[in-house]
Image 1 (cartoon, helix red, strand yellow):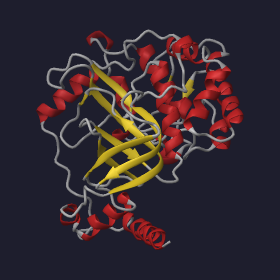
Image 2 (cartoon, one colour; image 1 turned 60 degrees about the vertical axis):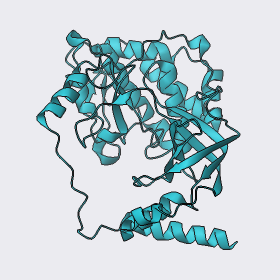
Image 3 (cartoon, one colour; image 1 turned 180 degrees about the horizontal axis):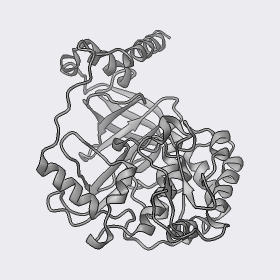
Image 4 (cartoon, helix red, strand yellow; image 1 turned 90 degrees about the vertical axis):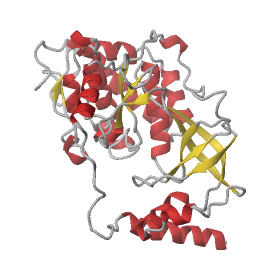
Length: 364
């Protein structure tokens, strides 16, 4: 009981700490990227693909199968805590598996866990880039403290995080129940200094003449973001990676969505709002918009989807059976699975069961 009260007290204090500015009242300074870093990053984005190379075959999709099978034990996984600066507001921490691989662990009563499990598995199944998420019944963390995320927020605000890390007890373990474990999709991240990720407005810079994705493929990714209600699309929530080789002189850049915890809303895991959010802002013109979502759509600009892009995504979505869709939500831990599946199927109909999109430029 005392441990529970102590843990709850830490959570309450750190919640205040999340909104507590540092001593200067400003964010930490960001080092602007050099001209060379910008060139390398922008060159990679211009040549980026948005689909992986695997052939799409809906009959092989099994959403109940864990994407980390053979690496993550979904019953009991052990890891060693990795000290890192806390970011965001979702309780999480980095950890190292016995084999040396780094994973991210999300824990607690957060809607981000089922949302991210479902979104990443769906993105992967449709052929997009996606990280691999597992639901783990028990994660045993050596070196963890009670409520590690919230404790670290407070230690950082007090300016004693480095001193605190010197006293971590790696011979002591704490168990976390029903967590999400994330393994990154293979590939070095490509950024420009402290600038990470990419904004949706930058997708127009992808050039098929330089080996990048076609407009149809880019439009399919845009439409998929709309399908998921991926409104929290600030640049760090997408990632540009070098698939299959090192980031230097990257031959196969891939643009992907990497943080889907706020999807299926807005804002987080909201069936009523998700089902009421239409795919098209102007169905006749095949325009999509996120301006009615939080942050006015963030980096997502209003855009007209090409007929080829609509058909590309729609043909893949409609090949998913009702059983597969229900399995997707069940495996991710959603409640009211039949209702979520019905909302999903309605969104598929909005994409697929309609007249052809008019030709024209992508900007609306």
